[in-house]
Every structure is written in structure tokens, then in C-alpha cells.
Image (cartoon, rainbow, N blue to C red; front, side, top):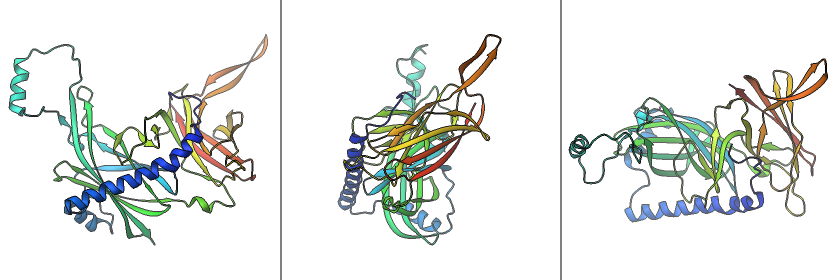
Amino acid sequence: MKIKNLLVPVLLLGLMLNLSLSTSLFAQEKKQEKQAQEARREIFPPEIKTVFAEGIQTRLVRPDILFSIAKHYYLPAQQNHHNIFLFKVKNADLGFAPIVPVGETPEKKEEKEKEEEVSAFQAEPNLVQANAHLFLQFNRLENGSPGELVKEVYIPFRIQEDGSLYKPDEEGLYSTGYPLPSGNYLLSMAITSGDLTKIGTQYFEFSTPNPTSFTDALDTTPIFFVKKIERMAAAETTSEVHKNIFTYSVLQIEPNIDNIFAPGEFLDIFFFVFGTQPKEDGRCKIEVNYQIFKEDQIVIRYEPRVYDTFPLVSQPLPMKSTVIIKSEEGEKTEQRDLEAGAYTLVVKITDMISGKSVEKKVSFEVR
């Protein structure tokens, strides 16, 4: 984790959450509506509409491009939740190919390469590129069946890789996101080749809670671990596809979706707390106790942390246990990295204004 002791600048981020993501949604809708009006056509091409119509009831996937939806996170965005979808695709299925300069045919490129001497050092990597399209269709989920069509989102994307590191059989982790009101949804997702001749689909059910429903209890968004957080110059105004990271407001976040750590690394958790009671100045005051268990035994107990601005927490926790060493000279304590094995992080959150509390558990592994 590059940013240690990061509790996101909550007042600023609170403003961003109220403005940036809702503005992004509005901007994206207007842009798509304008494009559709100018082209006098639907956002989705007929091929995609047909594929979704054929598969949505049975959830039968189209296997031209195989992919899987690995995780769904959500975080608050004014009256909406910003939904983040992490998905995995094998490199070969995205059709990575060497970049051919404009006006240079493959034949000319091959002839040029034969004439040039091979250099042991290259100033720039030999890039390969995949051009693809992503289509997201959101339907309300009613009694387990797809109901009202809520939104269609089209995202063209281009991914470049260093050709010397490219491995066709490896899976890449990608993300996209879109803000929606709370509720139960069915996501129909399609990834296609640039020319739409190959279409892969997946169907994914997800739910997000109504923030106003937490009157008698606390709850949290999905708690996840972070590898790295960086601040962007501005929030994105349209949905994009990213590799290895996702964006939220002005933050660029690289998640650890496998919950696997090396000895000596930090556990850096990220979550939002629902149901806190604000003080007169609008700020919250929550206390969070963190403990790490190995089976039924506590191996690390951290000092309680208090967050008194906004109930959005990004907290790095060192994985150092205190060991008592006995010798003829007496006893001494020593800090050691957690040994390899399976552990559970127990997070107990207490609202110091209302007295409400909730406990969450997250499993992880040290290798």
C-alpha cells in the first residue's frame, strides 16, 4: 500500500460523493442521449439486443468470449450507489495484436522489420493492443425474474500491453462502474470484439440497500482489501474500463480481491458505514476495534481507532504480532510478522453517538 495511514480526506470526499458521481451519471446520460438522437438509433446495436433478449430469461451465456464477474462492490454516491464490477477475461479472448501504424500494411511492416537490425535495447516497449466493446444492461429484478429495463450503458475500450510481457493464456482483471439507485438488479453484460463478430455474455444478480433503512442498526458496504490508492486530478465523467484498478470519485483503487498477503504487508481495508447518527455539525463519531484471529485464538489486537468526520474508512493495519520471549535474563517482547496461514479479521464498529454497533468478519491468508 503506497498511502499509509490513509483516512480519505473525508470532508472533501463527502463533497465529491455528493457532486462528482451524480454529475458523472448525468453527464454520461446526456452524452449517450445526444449520441443516440444524432445517430437516430438505439444505444445498443441490434446484435446485442438480440443476444440479451435470447439469454436473459434462462441466463444462458454466450461463449464466444469467455469471462467471469469476480466481484461486485458498491459505495455511496449521493442518492445512488456507485456499483463496481470486477471481471476476468483471458488475454487471448480479447484479441490482443501488435499495433500497426496507420498507413502501414502488415506486409510493409514485416519487410521493414527484416531490413532493420535487431537492437538489444528498445526505448519503448513493443505494444500489443485489444480493441473491444462492453455493453451493460440493468433490469430490475422482480421475484427472481428480469423486470423493468433501467439503463443501457455502452463502453468502447482499448487495452495496451507490453508485448514482451504479454501472455495469451493469462487472465486479466478488469473493472467498470455505474451509479444506480438502491434495489435488486439483474446485470446483463456483454464483451464483444471490435467488429462484433464475437460476443460473450454473462448475467449477474446484485442488490444494494436503501441507506435510509438503517434506523435501528449499523451495516457496511462490502469490506475489501486495498493494494494501492492514488488520487486522480478529477473524477471520471463517463463509465470506463480499467485494468487491475477501479475508480471512485477522485480515487484510483487497486483492490486485493483474493485476500492473499505476503508476510510483512499491511492489511488495508476500505468500507463505508450505514446508519451512523450525525452530530449537530453533521460529522459522525465511530469507534472501530480490529482483531486478527487464527482459528479461535487472538493473534493481534489493535488499539481502537476513532473516526470523527465521515463514516468512510480506509485503514492500513500492520500484520505484526507481539511475541513474549523468555530466557535466563528474563522476559522480553518482540514484534514478528504473521506466519503463513489462514486468518480472520474481526471488525467491530460502534457509533459513539447512538450506541449502535455491528461486527464484521473478513477471511484472509498469508503466504
